[in-house]
Length: 214
Image (cartoon, rainbow, N blue to C red; front, side):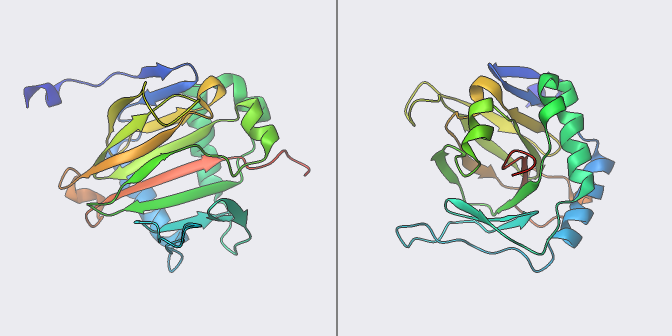
């Protein structure tokens, strides 16, 4: 489509939720893919939901690991590079949080083509972090996806869908910190081959799980 040739512009999707298209250059994306390959080597696993059903995509925790709906210790450190990237994203989106932002976890989700993630809230962090609106920074790599942003009260409408492409960043904080959200579809063959990724999408979600000193 010719519309795909037009530059995409940063958008405030809701109060506290900002989408910046093409935030990382192609070289930066390829570099981050290589770092993730090293940081997450042998670390991807598929958690089981409380009802006994496995999630339909694997993940890897850096700093802490995650299972529904709690964090637990891991021997994989939280990379300083992701701290830098998340702060760089906040400078462009929600700079008011920078003074109190000390990220300690990145959950790296790998979404194969055909996988999805139902509407949910991120509630595993301490209540202090949730109530303060401490932001979650999400970097997309690989195939594009349809991302659904909902409201903070329930999983039903109102919500709207946006396309997240490789190199995009999405920040959810403030009034949107507890918004329901999900990944509706992975769009096959939408990533550039120069990334060196197999088919699918990597989602790097960076956040602070607890107040410093706790």
